[in-house]
Length: 164
Ligand SMILES: Cc1cc2nc3c(=O)[nH]c(=O)nc-3n(C[C@H](O)[C@H](O)[C@H](O)COP(=O)(O)O)c2cc1C
Image (cartoon, rainbow, N blue to C red; front, side, top):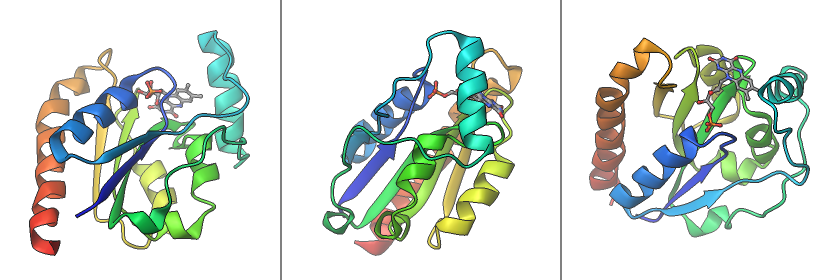
């Protein structure tokens, strides 16, 4: 099975998870970047990124992801912004051919609550099966990350065996 991991990461949490998953699953890895750089101060990041996600504003992307038709499935990695999916991923998901291939999503958030984000994603991802919510290390809930991540990667790999 040919698998693509597409992700966006501002502060590195999602990137680290995506790289680990790629190593475990031999998937192709692609990081989505925006044309306009995000602000550097934490306050401005929250204000600007929160505004984009809250209002459904889609920032222009700086790079083109690999063609969806070259893959059997896509795994999406993203941070939760303002309770929703990070705006650069929203831009990506305007493309139906990508949405149709997404089967699994992993999110990072400060609170550990990705329910609003997953609810939003389900509107666009008709074949979404596996989701996992990982939590920043500053939150005690992050103690559950390893266990949740193992269950997620096992489910993704088990699906490979079923489908290939
Ligand atoms: C613009 C912005 C909005 C955020 N909104 C939320 C939020 O609504 N809920 C939450 O739990 N965490 C929120 N966070 C925290 C991030 O989801 C969290 O730090 C995540 O791990 C960042 O992933 P990254 O390091 O891959 O960029 C927000 C962070 C930013 C920059």
